[in-house]
Amino acid sequence: MLLPLFGSTVLTGATTGGTQWDAIYWGFIASVSLTASAFLGARLKPSTKVIAGLLAFTAGVLIALLSYDLISVAFQTGGLAPSFLGMAIGLLMYVVANRALIRLGNKDRRSCEHGGNPAANTGAMALVMGALIDGIPESASIGIGLLDNKIISAAMIIGVFIANIPEGLASGAGLSRTGIPERRIVLIWLMVTVACTLSSWLAFVLLRDSSAFVQATLIAIAGGGILAMTLQTVVPEAFDGTDDLISVLGAIGFGVVFTLSHVTEGH
Image (cartoon, rainbow, N blue to C red):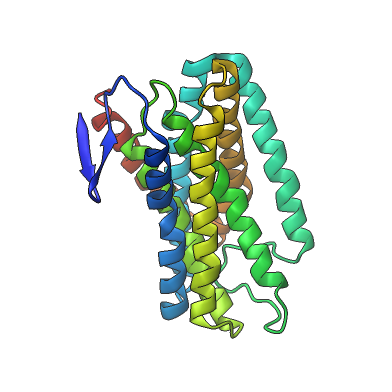
């Protein structure tokens, strides 16, 4: 079955893998929301409560994405051993990288109230690093998902697209408040989008001839990184601005991806 989207297709129920051009296309579609939302954030400067609400929704999206399109696929590809190995590596990588960001003074990088010294690039670079930490494993999972007989699902594309929006909005608003020009903000996040797109392509090209164990490990690494991001960053910052409402918004986000995973894949 083929689902049309932006002039291309999402493969569902297919028995053949994708191509490197599919990896580039879908990697770009999923990550371009970073640039678009950063532009909107710089223009509209949304409040902390709005960002927190979006983060709460995103938390549910990411939990469903992990359950149905990452860890599950890793297990189906290589079994329990590479799935748990990859998860452990992904978790560790995210924890180490996140601590490096905290040392740069960028603890609450998804808060639209974050600031920074307008005369320095430290804040902007920390935001870029943060987006890469989150975006690269998410985008790589798209490229990995197109390998062999694996198919890229609508849930994966939409889930990653949605997950990028709060960070883009928050960063655009925060950087704008420091006096950084709108054009420079868009350029910064366009570079991140390009990097994420390349990670999708590289994952597909470099892992095309690898063993099922290696592929499963890499898929699970992406899942482990996203799990750590959800628990350490998304949920705490969402709860700070939404309190008990996080459960409702998170459940809605989970329901959206759950529905997409089952309806579009014919489960």
